[in-house]
Amino acid sequence: MDSIRCSKMLIVVKIGGNVAKEITSSGLIPDLKSLLQENTIVLVHGGGDEVTEIASKLGKEQRFVTSPEGFRSRYTDRETVEIYTMVIAGKINKQVVLALQSAGVPAFGFSGLDGALIRANRKKKIIVVDDSGRKRVIDGGYSGKISEVNPHPIKIILENGFIPVIAPVALSEEYEPLNVDADRTAAYVAGFIKADRLVLLTDVDGLILEGEVIPRLTVSETEKILTKIGPGMITKVYAAMEAVNMGVPEAIIANGLCNSPVSSAIRHSCGTVITRE
Image 1 (cartoon, rainbow, N blue to C red):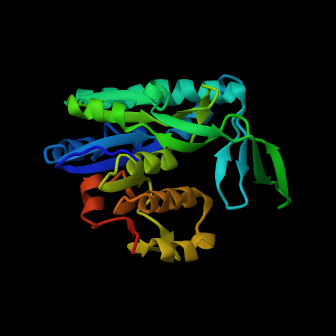
Image 2 (cartoon, rainbow, N blue to C red):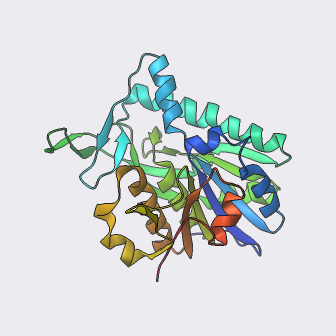
């Protein structure tokens, strides 16, 4: 892995689709502006719900599948990956960039295709669990497993005073766009640039079990409770574990709709902190 050398704390922040929609009215942008005085920030965004909404308007109903591990994901055929790329790398990415720039935050939006930022291996076959609970093998479509992140485009953007805003579209071995999960994208970005913190912002207060937010977990403790975690949260938990296993000291899952969400997360005053030990 290469790294971005920086005297400031390097923080990768991932915002989900709901947080991205509320970005102008939430406390996120003022918090980022404040943090940028003493820290360096890289932003990764999602937006799957908006992809689904626009695809439906275009007459392309979306299909979702569940893996044996409990991951729920979009089945991405050729037409879907084109819509996905258009919405994620186009509409949503530019909305986030405009919101940041209107608040005085210099932002540079791009996707994993640009500069071969994110490379992924196309999944030839995937195993899914059908409604009856049986496992089936189906064609993998245009979804991918991230293999590499190129730190150099991120470094260039940071050195020129911009905050990178990354859309989770990856480049396949055959130079095709691939749908990759935004949380896992943020984890790999954080790992490959050797970030000091990964903050995964969502619309809940953290990892909640039996009605209570779990404030802190190690990777080994997290592995023991994976079967208790629902499909809405398990991808974020896996992403946090991946980042920590790649050398990121802490990954925090926190609510992005509260005041000062990133500052609160890195101060450990909210959310769930996952560490190596």
